Length: 401
Length: 196
Image (spheres, rainbow over the protein chains, first blue to last red):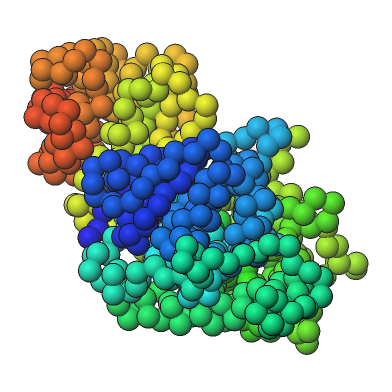
């Protein structure tokens, strides 16, 4: 069914279609309308779930951890400082291998206080062991959230679905909400391999020794590092699983095909812009202009799967181009943009190695003007690789002072 | 990039319903065959009574640029008094359209650079049986008549759906009355000096 609604409502509709059974969330701008919508759905009896009104984000994720451990499908969502407040549980959920889904409605992190969009909140949790997906429009919020539940439950790794605050959360655009019956075929009922069972008591995630040892059953128990190694290995394997899930989704719903990253006009491109979220879509108009007005063969590569990072696919997508321009809304302070570091690292083995430039835009909702993106991208395409000493410091776009 | 995007900026005061009005028009545009309809409110630390605005873009193709409108084709103003506080016509394209809720006669609102449409929406809303100050349904009628982009029946249908449970018929009636009473005009062009 086609509808026009806000991105937060698209997310709530996806969570309803996924038949989440426990919602625990603490309101924070710009996530608030998502959780309000879910509580309305529960109140009206449209969603058969329990809404747990918690006193903090830390508790919100703790409730979801408890719910998943007890064998029911949970959901939570947050933004910015709320995500940071739950950070301890974010790491715990990944280490405990709990199949959770959380929407992160991306917002800049205080101080200074801001309610507007950038990606620093999700990026700050990059190394927590969660799968991180970034989406570009409402259809992707809907479809990716549904895929995220299946992925989390297949690989027992929690998934963040990240979408831009305001640009998507509060913007209205058309999207298709699939039928419940087909979603049910795509997403089987929740199953967690280690559901707590009072008749079979056991210890979970208690103090784990630095080295392997013999457990109470006389079997060799893995060490902390063994367990963490498994998480890493299965994170990497999740790349293939996501592709398979996307293929299954496509067969049922006729949408998808770019689960890891989406190239646009990249086939003959000499220069490729790399970005995440709505910024990647905004670059489509820029690419058109570069091609039509300047004869610059440009394309844009939208990264959807940020963690695990699909290194070999990124390398394959960018090998042979002259220049790569990485635009991002986050920073590793004192160094560079995190996505830039990832892309450059993925391209290190390419021969010849494309030149890579880094641009920081839109922190704390700083206006991202399409004309300014065009001017900076055009200049970079004309100058890239010609500097005497390539400079890997980021360029800032849109500074006021 | 096949056909142009029609950019419409809505100005009102917090609580006046400019965002709801733009959302209703987005829905109506989508149902009238504009596959790309996108409405992005500009948020700050909003409060009742403070000036707010929202961007509505409609096109026959998918819209991927979600940035705020800088050069609108149409500007809609829910409260003409706001024009003393906000430069509502900033960036309005030459030959564009300004739609005003105002009790002033059209002649006093004309402008050399763009077409102007006026309707006394406050008065119309009360006539339609709405509470004083409810203007966001009436202004849709004025916008519809002046822009010619969407049929009245589609607009009133979308209004009734949006306001279901909140005087849907009166709100649709306000739009209908405003459609009828909207006047549109341009300032006459000065006589060409080159006529010798």
